[in-house]
Amino acid sequence: MNVIVLAGGTSTERDVSLISGSMIYRALRKNGHKAILLDVYLGYEGGTEDIFERDVDWAKDIQKIEEQNPDLEAVKAMRADGGKSFFGPNVLALCQKADAVFMALHGANGEDGKIQACFELLGIPYTGTDFVSSAMAMDKGITKDIFTAYGIPTPEGFRLKKGTQGNGMERKPDFPCIVKACHGGSSVGVSIAMNEAEYDRALSEAFRYDDEVIVEQYIAGREFSVGVMGGKALPVIEIAPKQGFYDYKNKYQAGSAVETCPAQIDAGTTARMQEIAERVFVALRMKSYARMDFMMSGTGELYCLEANTLPGMTSTSLLPQEAAAVGMSFEELCEKILSDAVR
Image 1 (cartoon, one colour):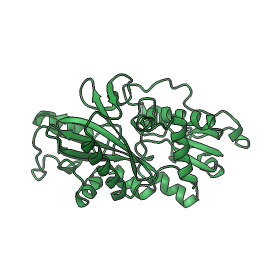
Image 2 (image 1 turned 180 degrees about the horizontal axis):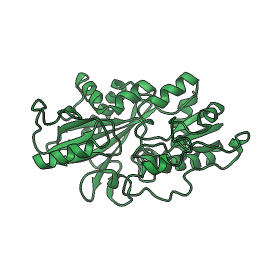
Image 3 (image 1 turned 45 degrees about the vertical axis):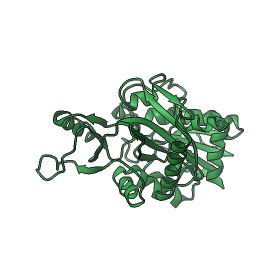
Image 4 (image 1 turned 90 degrees about the horizontal axis):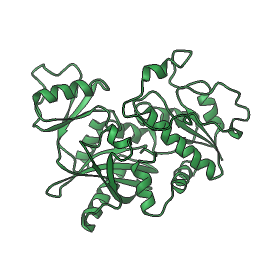
């Protein structure tokens, strides 16, 4: 099968996407597919006649994910046309030549349904869920509204738009609280505020990435994640950062967190968390696969934080570890996701 692995882009999670894409690319080639890894923003300006016969891996020179976000302005400067279109040279034409596109994108313009909608209009098969559920899950405010409507336990919270803080009309949080960008991913723009001064700094940080933020109840306790494939939950994984919380650095720097799968919790709690994850999958109208993040308070109460429609596929990512716990190799996981797209 001719497969485009689509990665990169201009989100803060660009490097995460490229590393994920490179691993997926190698797995698919090992599985016998004619795959190429393509940066959605930089595109490909060489000849395309025999493109699927070549070894095309945009991420081969990226050895690791840095602790800091990539310099997106430097990335945008790499485009000769100034990046007037999000799609780089030949990207759409090559995707139309492929039997399927494996989505390895993360963050804005990757997980928010825009590319998925474009592909549907062009008749291009792609992996993961559709544009509707992608858009709903990417907006943490909409996700929280849907969780509430479906009776899915989630921390209390409210939205705040840029420019409205300080007008005397916005709600005030109880401390400690969590502040996060409404449409962000990989914990970019997420802070814990213990007091008013930290809250103001957290808002400023979150508003760097988004015009809307979510302020929500801080849940002290243990953190978990549950992957769902085809509507069925995988084993629960527990994440225990060695320092701080599960932020961008702790997600992607090897050794920054202790991850245990299956999580060492009782069978009843496991079943309850998996059942909630499956309900989230249905509530957000997801297809193929996703991953749900949870907190468990000191008294055992479960809270679903959010849903990820394109979970990371790096060596430290959670979904591959959960799949491995049920005997599914990384190559088998990629093959299952791909087969869902072309079925």
